[in-house]
Amino acid sequence: MHPVFHVSLLEPYRALNRPNREQPPRATEEIEGDLEWELERIIRSEIISYTRKVRGWNKPMKELRYFVK
Image (cartoon, rainbow, N blue to C red):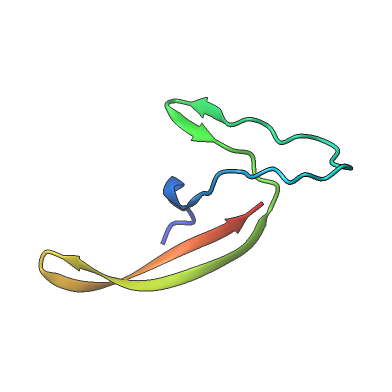
């Protein structure tokens, strides 16, 4: 298992209307055709289990997901 996650699992940033907010978030950068974000920290991670049909067989799969700020 590699410590990576797919870009489709990220959600777009939603700004909150806070009057004392110090710095607006940076815009995404496009690097070699992919969008890249700067993360403040990893809040939580979890391993989910599911089954996927592979070549006619139900194969158990595990996926590591990160919740990031």
